[in-house]
Image (cartoon, rainbow, N blue to C red; front, side, top):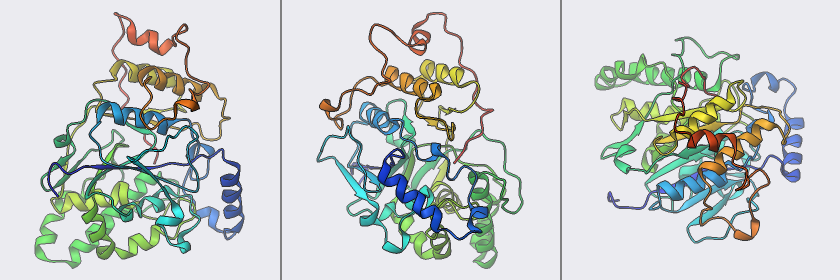
Length: 372
């Protein structure tokens, strides 16, 4: 691998409105043991967890706009395909059945699914992993994401996590932090003096990581499958997200890499939007005002069991169309625009806000707590 080697992109995607998929999900719920609901994480089975609000479509537009030199794009999905997707030699749909063993299927836990993505055949050594609600927001400079020894990570703006055992009422991100740090502590105490000496570098950092593009090294994931097989086995046992299971890719890998000098902390200009909050409009206005200067942003669907025509979801589509109006090369022109796209003659309130000379400074989003 050289610094000029292509950097592939991996997305997870699901269409929660698909009737066949919904039937599969309902059957999986009915087959769970009666006491298993107590182990399910908060928000693990709400509609917002699986809803497709065209985020992938716009994330690909942002990818093409801000990182046109990306490598191959892989979309990992469960026997589904976006109806607007155009065949391309730069994109491959990866079905769950072709990536995971039959014993792992079906699963509706993104943490379970993402623990397999480094096994995608042909995947580059360096790659970005995205949830479909994460977007590049400014031109990508690879040195801002990767360094010669590994990659950069960034903390979220959430409050520090308390140093205690995992709790059923905690968020998945908080419990992931606790479980990963406990594993690293235990390994350090039973390991070499050098490893024990490294331990203070990470054991007291009880913070969660930001919802961001995840720069990854395939070799690290392959090594960790051998180093921490019990963690991989635990998360690969889930059907739905469980509060007491590890989060491999979005937490453990990052902390392990920090502890071993393969990752470093970096501060990015970013924005996190929580669509279920009362100040959603203000958050979206801030995103529009900052777009082009943000290195990344996340629009997390926290509307939970809202109907598909909920105005909050329509607001998100209006904003995405206003800031990313140009279709990517992955879109089939015959598919047309979705119904929520604003017309050229009627600019949205968010477009008007972005064009005002006297636009106010965007509010600080640090008070919003991320969901996994």
